[in-house]
Amino acid sequence: DAMVIQNPRYQVTQFGKPVTLSCSQTLNHNVMYWYQQKSSQAPKLLFHYYDKDFNNEADTPDNFQSRRPNTSFCFLDIRSPGLGDAAMYLCATSKKGTSTDTQYFGPGTRLTVL
Amino acid sequence: EDQVTQSPEALRLQEGESSSLNCSYTVSGLRGLFWYRQDPGKGPEFLFTLYSAGEEKEKERLKATLTKKESFLHITAPKPEDSATYLCAVQAAEGYSTLTFGKGTMLLVSP
View 1: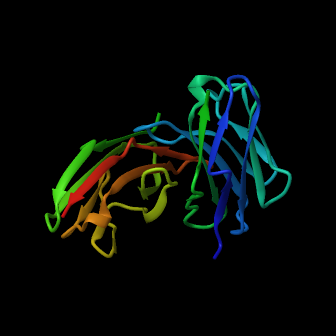
View 2 (view 1 turned 45 degrees about the vertical axis):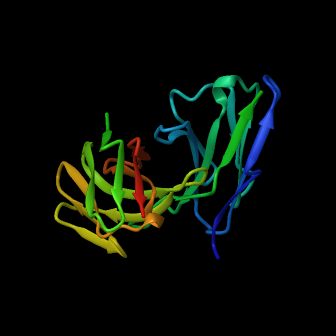
């Protein structure tokens, strides 16, 4: 089945220790997104890639970076995690140029910062 | 600025007790309104996309409807497995825009 895969599902890091979260997709979608979701809150878009074009949301902290080495993979790097960065990180994909442009989400990575 | 407000924040139903969830939105031209289901500790699962006022879509016990200002997710004779948080999101028509999500309605269906 075509899908969005996130690894790891759970990540524990220490305050200030860099961490990388991974997302891969078999849907052959040209857009990939990273969201941050805290408890009982709406998913908050951090950035997205349309093919190789990177689009950063205006209020995304510089502490968050992303890489998309190819169509299938996208990474979220948190350079110096703080306690406030503990959250669920969601990867999503969509195919721009279709009528629906629906976003499909992965299972998420729960990040804990000690 | 696009805005999405969902109500109620939480809803508790008995099995078989039908109800509706509300999603009110303001957007500068609607391209699409999306409903997702999210189980605890998991990513959102796509349910429906609605594009224009008057449109309706159904899936099992769920039916989504759309007006110019709001959308409803009707749940008919819910079962405990329908318990989840239901998220609503809008996409604006201008240019290429991303989704604006509401905070969701947490639904608990008791047997």
